[in-house]
Length: 292
Ligand SMILES: [Mn+2]
Image (tube, rainbow, N blue to C red; front, side, top):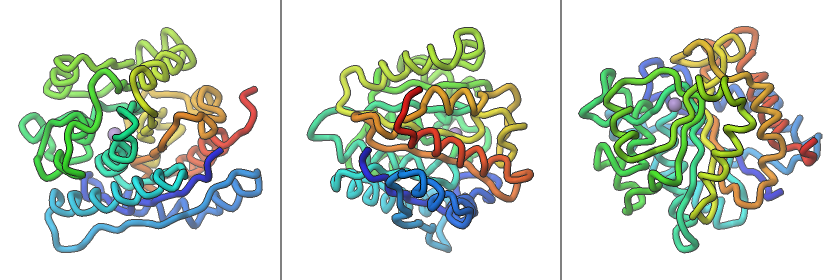
């Protein structure tokens, strides 16, 4: 396994409830990282980025995601695996812009997006104006130029190289964009019908076909709110986290995984630290040596 370096993104600028800005601090203080190190997982906390004050959400996210993209690119260039812990999901703009840039000379970036939502609005289609509803569209080349143009090339990811898992809440504008682009969406109904293992196997094929490497972005609202209450926009009937633990066990050892992201953890909305424990379980499973 490549050494894993955590990059916290202490920002809620992209969400209506900014409480997820406290997410990385809560994870860092939880003792999770020392616990993983005791299990022989080579993981360390590299840094936590904070948004500048006094800027609009758009300008603040632009600066923050440009910084994050640099951190992620540098980490990958040093043959380490960035684990980004948000913060609201607008951090994905920085994470995957940096990963795409690091990989660019070798080839394209694949991405598996695990989320209750599509996060594929543009400023023209968004009902809320919140930028955490837009990062996937930005990465595909649609949205505010301030965000689309981070790292000076676009799109970061081609529609054929990305897929979504667990979607069950969306608006027509973003659905139309993804449908027009031909992006594969594994809606929650399909996950329930086929099982997460079959869906993930297909997702891993999509993310690796014609790419030089792939990433996984996990929004904690993908899970059942009972298992993960600590999120800003919970939606019922989600993924079971133990099933995902099992399906992605040992994924940090995958030779073509370039980065991993966990977003939207909001400790202010958590109950009995259930979401925090879920993050701990997920990372423990991802670090496991053994697939069985
Ligand atoms: Mn999301």
